[in-house]
Image (cartoon, rainbow, N blue to C red; front, side, top):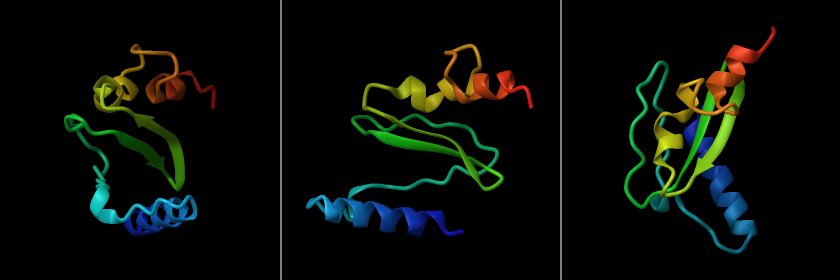
Length: 94
């Protein structure tokens, strides 16, 4: 699957329907790969993060320009908050 091109198309199509087309020069899609080391959200930027595993999205979220902790580390640490991806995985009974 070519996620970057698929997401580009979805972003453009949805934003066009809303009357405010966003083309790919206005955002950046970064695939960090598996495994990866999280990196800081650039200053004054917002982000959408996705965790994908074996064909399914495990978590999709957004962060504002003042939410670097969530973008950088929160979902990797099961003790940072009960709603993090790490805590959810550890509490899953399957």
